[in-house]
Length: 193
Length: 177
Image 1 (cartoon, each protein chain N blue to C red):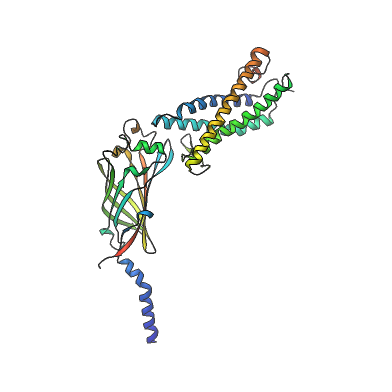
Image 2: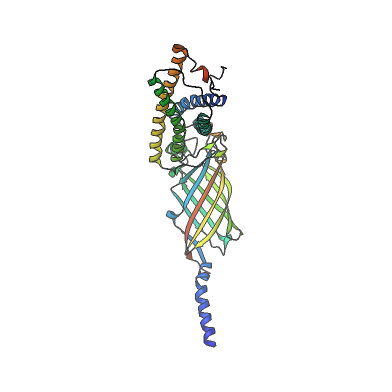
């Protein structure tokens, strides 16, 4: 009897070990090649998908300590693929991103909160073209084996950042709302308890 | 009773499609190498909407042609009747193939067609730059063929009306009786 109890206890420890170690882990080793930053713009009602190839994500996220979480994304705007070569040549120009003057965009979180279940929300400051605005981005977090996967997005209003000035400021042709989507994969490193 | 004129449905469909082609064709020629601007995006959309309307009208128009009685052929040399027949068949083929090739090209270039800005049409092929370039050439070539055939069609109608002074054009005229 005693033997069985001890065996059960060991088994329990063995089974729970990964769970326990996970709880004490912080996801902070971003795997850039598995992460993506995409967007959908609307031109005359036509959704056009785009992506950024070069961006650096720095995150620290422990599902057990969400209030301590932080995220930062540094984005190389020249790495844009806006759906066609013609669009790529256009959007780096002065009326759009003006990448000569503003080569990078960044998002720096100010706080993360839980929305219940596997849903969370990151608030932070987004800076594009020299303009900084508050944004909030809901996202989900799930663990897949040893990595954490973050999926989320938000709607960016391009005119808030003067993206598309002059003739392009008319939102009847290119809509003001741009749907941004991010997919971040990160490994974990154990942290002090 | 054998009709002396085309049916009202056939006449309406003929001229509606003619007007649409006469707008879409020069629009396509004008817009295709414009520098990118909101106007260009608008013109491309209008061009696509017109093309999709032509495609939409194709089936009812074909049904009218097949099932509504047409006036008998007017007397003409046998070779002319053969050429006319062939031209009409090819015109039907191109009126279908030209907008279809445009739709395919738009899909391959990664731009979904959203009819009238409201109704998203399915992409016929997935985004593929190489295929997009090929379909652009196909669309242009088919348009060139359509341009030639429409020219022949108009020249023949004019010849019948002005030189032969027969009823060929009148019986398709929206104003006649």
